[in-house]
Image (tube, rainbow, N blue to C red; front, side):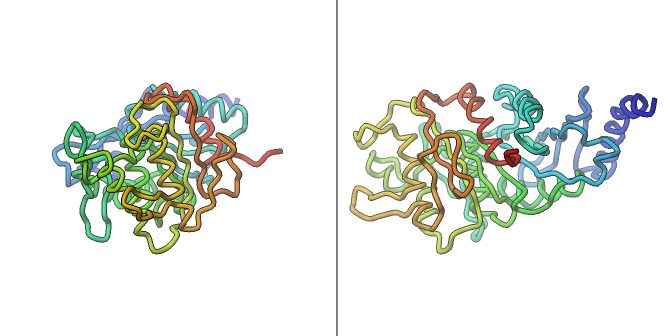
Length: 335
């Protein structure tokens, strides 16, 4: 009988949780509990983007509201492009991995893209409090990346830690994205390593460059590559970087490797530029790289890098990339 009452009261407890969240941030956020009490929708203020509010969905792990879990704290996965979670199969993938006991329970905080996606998803220079803007066929990329990244790291993360039972340390926070969202996920880890300890980058837009006047200029002015090259110390980060082998056909230096793969590989391994200079990669900074074991990298590796041979630049591919990434980030010890 007690178990039946506990089960019946669980949705009520989650509803009350949502109402408490709403009251505690009056004027700053609107909280809405979905039909599934484990999903909470938020609309959060961000001064730099007013009057636009940023939509956030919080996915709580199974058993979060149970009395037995009242003292349990959870790691957190922050994900860009939160509006894509259904398309990449987040909930089904989590349910399967939980059923298999393949991963530990995790809170997922999915942040929807801004109305102007290209402005927020880019790179920034935290020390100078400015965005690092690159060019593209559709115009500037990352013109407000500093404002967005700083909001995530200094406003959203503290909000989540204050309102949910999180393990509030960098080592227990991961940031994930795909395409431009992956570029920004890399930026969040790189610029805020005291906030995020792991980065997941699916099909990252490491092609973003300062100079697009020629293929050689692009290769020599890639912005993420330059950020790694300028680093003076190894940051306390781990990376999961995955690229599809069929994402595009562009091959700017005609070496038989598509640009999407080459851009990611260069950032990991370092590169000799057309003018003969060398730009360092993650491995040159002392990161241990595993590029030989596909989607089952060594647990000792700091960087897991693999090419999904038939992967394309789309949500169907990112859906395939998600399960091994989650096992890498939150896998339970083999029994």
